[in-house]
Amino acid sequence: MRYKIVIRQQYVSIELRSKRRKVMKRSGYLSWDEYFMGVAIMSGMRSKDPNSQVGCCIVSEDNKILSMGYNGFPKGCSDDEFPWDREGSDLETKYFYVTHSELNAILNYRGGSLEGAKLYVSLFPCNECAKAIIQAGIKTVVYDSDKYALSPATIASKRMLDAAGVRYYQYARTGRKISFEV
Image (cartoon, rainbow, N blue to C red):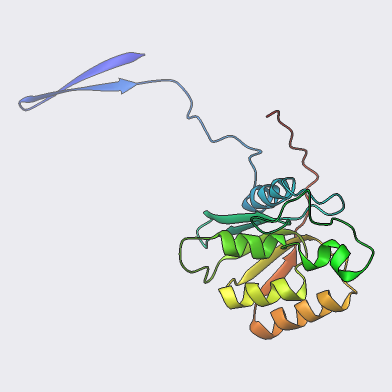
């Protein structure tokens, strides 16, 4: 490094000159969609459901995480006492008891309005969750899987989201592997 002393009128200043090149930001960082879908998928890993682990992440218009949720039983309903079965009589299966990840994320939010927010979810929302999404004012849904696309619940969901002007699109997987130890 060299120093250059410059005298101007009564002031003395020292200018630092360096031959170092400018350091640029790193490349390869996660996109917002990768980040938020990753958070949704990781949230789903909290689910105790032996068949379906669905996670959700709700973000503000300026990309701040507002809430998260995963599919599971309501507070106070034991994961060990309520059924996880998929087949059997209505009261002996999980379907009357499990709260979906989207509804959990909406209900977990304590900050006021979700108007204009974006919801990331690992499985396309059912018709019941679509109602909650619309009523909460969420404007965009980004989903990973749409494995029940031909089911009446998903068809009804898309019909309501379309009518309410809620945009939805499938997350474009990048193939990036993310791994870390916890």
